[in-house]
Image (tube, rainbow, N blue to C red; front, side, top):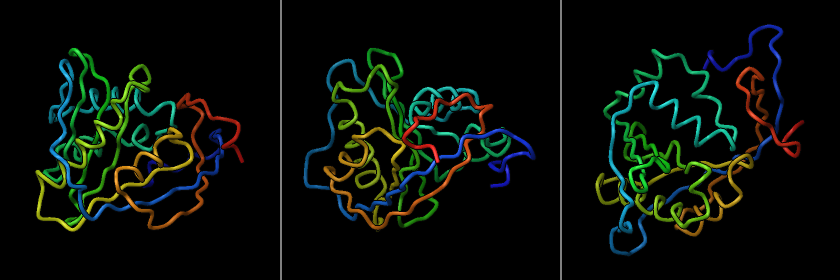
Length: 194
């Protein structure tokens, strides 16, 4: 990912995160996810601008930065990949969150991104959206070997517990150092700084 390298002399915030990799081999026995009235989930093909808007709004508090740096042509190619699925969560027509899965590592499917806009956190929508993401992989995309995801200490503090509660198991943890370009305008929490 050459595009993620800092330019010579570029200012950045150096942070340290623990990345936890998780795996789900089978969906827990349960009926398919049902959303309450006014809440919908739709599969959508997004253009670069629409994708960047939702990615930035959902991910800013959690330091999602790599796709912010990805050149438009690479992102456009990624967004048109037949192995990619993006589902948008709406509440009364307003975008509340999204998830993105990638079947490139078939027979595994990776949950690349998952999250809610800040104004929709704490309303129970995260558990529903995660259940729907799992449904989309194990009900809509079978047969497959499993579902993978990773989260890190920059993510929402409930991310890891929610994945574990949904049945994911930890496969490994690694410490990573990230240099996040200051030009992105992300607010870096002090506890992550190196």
